[in-house]
Length: 92
Image (cartoon, rainbow, N blue to C red; front, side):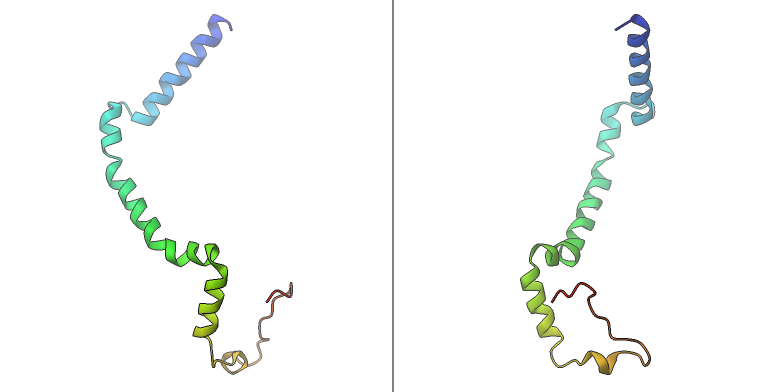
C-alpha cells in the first residue's frame, strides 16, 4: 500500500466520522439515540402481533380466521359484478 493510498483512507475515514457525528463528540450523538431507538422498539412491538404473528404461526392464524369467518358466505358480501376471489395457485 502506498503513502497515497494510506492518505486517501485516512481522509475517507475522517470525512465519514465528521458526517456521522456532524462535528460533535460521538458520545453526545450516541446519547441522543436513546429516544429514537426506544420509539422504534415501541413501534416494532406494536406491529408484532399484526404482521409477524400470522407468519410465525400459520395454522393457529388459519383456525382463528375460520372461526371469525364462520357463517359468512363470500358471494353474499361480494359487490355485484365482481368475481369472487380465488387463489390462482390452488392453495387452501
